[in-house]
Length: 124
Image 1 (tube, rainbow, N blue to C red):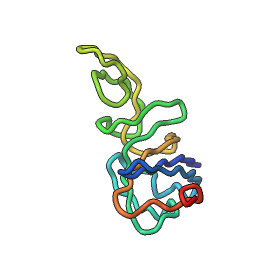
Image 2: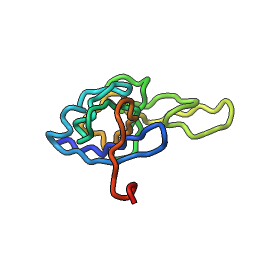
Image 3: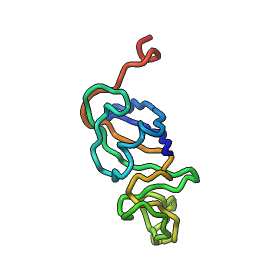
Image 4: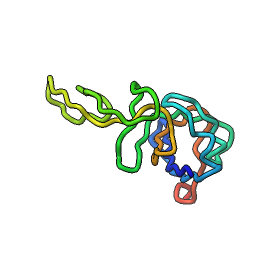
């Protein structure tokens, strides 16, 4: 039983959030960070979006360079999952792999083709 909160943003800074459950979420399972997915699964007209990241229920972020759908402790100096801005600091942090599994809760995506649907708040 997969439940995803999918946040799709475009290059202008607009974003929408949709929750997908069970059969609606099936096309996303097994995709990787960087894959293009058809936007019709979100109820948007013809277009594509790219998976850029995500996190699980405990907030552990996904990272593109960790292969598989597992959680691992890796040594980080910068990038996703590392907050320190001091030079030369390295920390071992818990990171999730780059494959979308059932444990993923939130998916961040970028709209590549198509346009964002108009909402009633934007029309006013």
